[in-house]
Length: 391
Image (cartoon, rainbow, N blue to C red; front, side, top):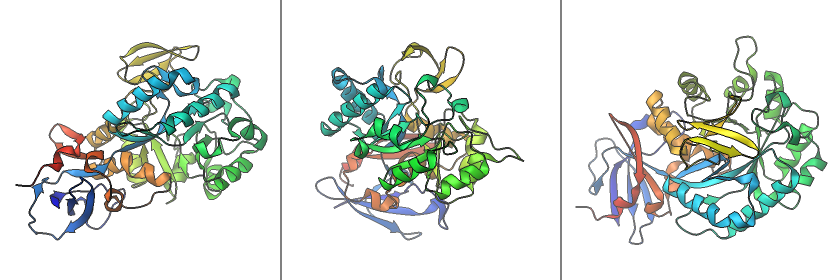
């Protein structure tokens, strides 16, 4: 057994020992994490001294729309090699798993994309990001809050419309974003929850009371909080305020500093510690240079990692998921909570509520991340170097 000592673990919520608790992590001869033990205050343990660096699982992105020129709703069988290249790129960027996001589109390409993703999931191998169930973002959205979603393919909520789109693919869906205030949405929420699919409020005109009713009915997340929905106003608190007042609703955040101002992102983190979920919302140009790109039939303009349509409508980003954690720390968020927002909390949304110490047990140290904070900010690397023998 080899030991890493003076290790911090990310924590989603504020707790009594705060970020000061140190741990030691045991790695067996096969390179697997076999022990994670708290160190008593003031104790000295032999091993490789991490000097307070953080150890975490790799990132999980619940909202990513494509990359390397691929848009997930446009996937065909011929795209499988490039999709696998994208999954390798995501792995190199510290992301272990994604919910490939399918924005509003016509029914045939949606079902084709789900079939291609299912095949790619079967072809998974080490060194590639895993494909979790898809995130269906639309088409059951409020037209006035559709953002960059094409209006022509929006659809009123109904069980028939849902079956037309995902019938036979129910097991391949993990997350659905919809506007819960729309007529017929309540039946969809019940149907989706009965199949174990997480439902998220997004692209919605819901007011506070409508959002409260949706959360009480089992809606467990807010998609890209403060975007494509009402802001928090002193006399009209809106859905984000309603979510912050609960303990069981996660808040997705695009932390590029453009979709949500840094001060507001930090405010969300303080209002809902332990429930912030960083998402990239990356589009097809992820992994490509800034400039002019195509998104379906429309032009997509990318500048410093932020994507807009030609009319200026915000559409997403091309920044890696873990860049969001770095920026959040730069704005003032405690490092342990920012790391958790990219690694632990997304897993909790999908049903894994184990603390970091338990999540790390039994996984190869090479699949984990080491985070270091200094005057240059928060940075990460693969923890492979930790396999070296202790002095």
